[in-house]
Length: 251
Image (cartoon, rainbow, N blue to C red; front, top):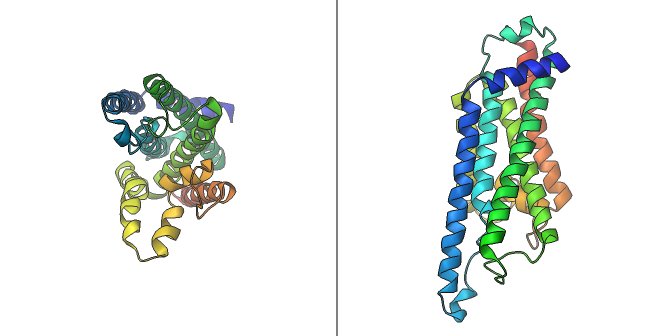
C-alpha cells in the first residue's frame, strides 16, 4: 500500500495540472478578498438605515464552490491520468490501487480545503474588523468553526466523487461536466420545481448540504447528521461505481 501511494503521489506531482488548479484556488482567494474589501468600503460609506440590508462580506462563500469544483477535477485527473492502467504493472492488485488513489485524493482535498478556508476566512476577518452583523457574520472563532468544518468536509466529498466518476466514465472532460452539473447546474434548476419538491431536492444538493452540516440554516430540511449522511452517500455511490468499473475493466 505504501509503494502504491508513493507511486500515485509521484505521478500527481510530476504533471502541471495540479499546480494550475492550486494556483486557480489561490487567485480565487485573492478575488474573494477583493470583493470583501469592496463590500466593506461600501458599507462604511452607506447610511446606517441601509447598512442592515447588507449581505455578509465573508469571502469563503466564493472560495468554497470553486474549491469543491477544482478538487473534484483533481480527483478526475487522478482517476484518468493513466487510461491504459500501466500502474497495474507495479501494483497488480486493483483494490490496492483504488485505495491508494482514494487516500491520495482524500488527503490532498483536506489539505487544500483547510488551507483555502484558513486563508479566505482569515482575510475576511481582517477586512471586516469589528464591524457588526450582517456584514460580519460571526462574533468569535467558535462561530466560524462549524461552517469551516462543513466546507472542508464538502471539499473532501467532491474530491472523492470526482475520483469515482473519473474511474467510472474514464474521461476527465465528461467527469468535469458531470461535477459542474451537480455543483452548479442542478442548484440553478431545482428552485423552479413545484413545492415542496424544490425544497426537498435542493436540500440534498452539495451547495446546500454545506449549510445543513454546519447547522447554520433555521428549519433546514436536513439536520447536520442527515446532511453528513447525504454527503457520504454521494461518495459511496460514485466510488462504488468507479470501483466496480476499475476491478472489472480490461487493462
